[in-house]
Length: 209
Image 1 (cartoon, rainbow, N blue to C red):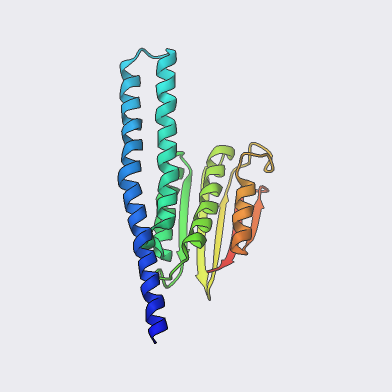
Image 2 (cartoon, rainbow, N blue to C red):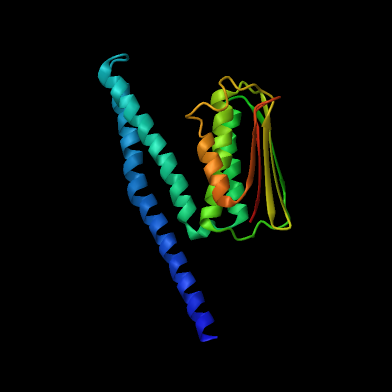
């Protein structure tokens, strides 16, 4: 009983540390990056369009926004408050809104009866980043007008299906599309991952959670 209490106490301590690190980095580093992005945009607006300095400021602003997005994913992955299936689903829904901005009509279907399922931080990070890479590839390389996302959790198995009605504009195995990273993350999950570019672009992911 004492050993069990000690283990619970250690787990709670680790969770507290994860939450504190995520909060501190968000407040400190995130704030600095946000200020760099905003100031760069303001300076670029005050310069004449087309000059070299204006282009450099625009690149700084874009790189800052990209860094903010990457840091947000890292902080979310280590934050102990995000260790539930529902939290991951909410983040997926939020990211999927980029499809609407690109005029891609998207349906997002979720089939699960328990959003409170606990997920290990590395597991939900791998699943989410595979999802994010698939959506990003769809936006960058497909001419789709419709997309469907379906996530099912049944008997401890998660199945993620993503598909669109477009055609990939570049060969699927070209480097730089993140396919190698998707396969690497699937291997770490001991998951089955299928990437299909026939009759639309899509992926199928199946793993135990």
